[in-house]
Length: 328
Ligand code: G3H
Ligand code: 13P
Ligand code: NA
Ligand code: ZN
Image (cartoon, rainbow, N blue to C red; front, side):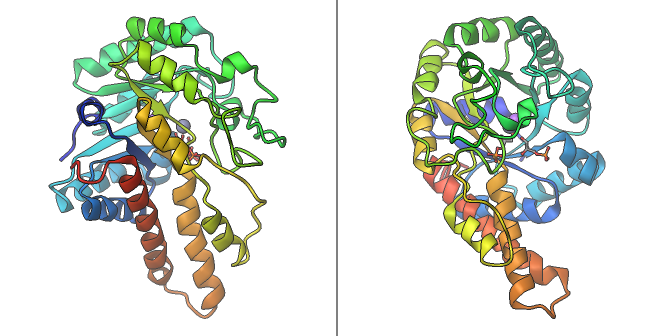
């Protein structure tokens, strides 16, 4: 059944678990994620970016999510707009059946320029009033992540995008977070704690210097009733880099957010964990392997089936490790 983000994360907070939010663009991703959820007895968050909505179309996405929840009636499903850039994006998502939206006012509407604090408060408060009036949940964002949000590639020095942005911008200020939530009334808050979007987050395994668990702990202490969201949470596992590169790929060595760091974040109050890059790598790794091992193959299902299996395995691992398993 479709539920709101607020309903799911209230339960996650009571029980002390985290929920991965997987990006979805097509049927195969949806099937793989829901198969994993079913095997683990886990609730799921499916999220669609603006790019996903234009790729699949709003009508297709709505019917796909309805079909998935009809196929797996015992699994609670949240349908969430990822990185909404203005009121129109968020409200049209709700009209198309999304039960939750992210109003990302940390950036201007162009999603490239860091926004002023006042702009962020104003637009997030306005979207929250409208969403709450029709029973949908809202995620806001305070603080600017690296690469995707600035339009800059991650720096080559192992510090994510830190070379481009000031330390203050990269770590959400806990007192400002308190003011932001009281003025916007958002249900969940995406915070900046040193992660960035995409595959090229770090050039070495990150430690306490480039991932700030202290920021998460400080915000959670001041805002115990606001659900914290960690974007840029792909782990970019070595086995998937190897699978891609052993089959004709050419991805430079890179490091993501180790799953054990996410587990620490969940113990410190993170409830929603955004993962897209890992899912892309799982599918693409298998596409490449089939193409290399079976050059005569041309039936797309022969590519899709192992790709879905690889994605399902990745999702199951995250459900188990985040404590989502058994919570449906
Ligand atoms: O945070 C961004 C997500 O990974 C979605 O990416 O805009 O290419 O669909 P996309
Ligand atoms: P990754 O690129 O680390 O998967 O992050 C995805 C994300 O934050 C989507 O909003
Ligand atoms: Na989001
Ligand atoms: Zn994100």
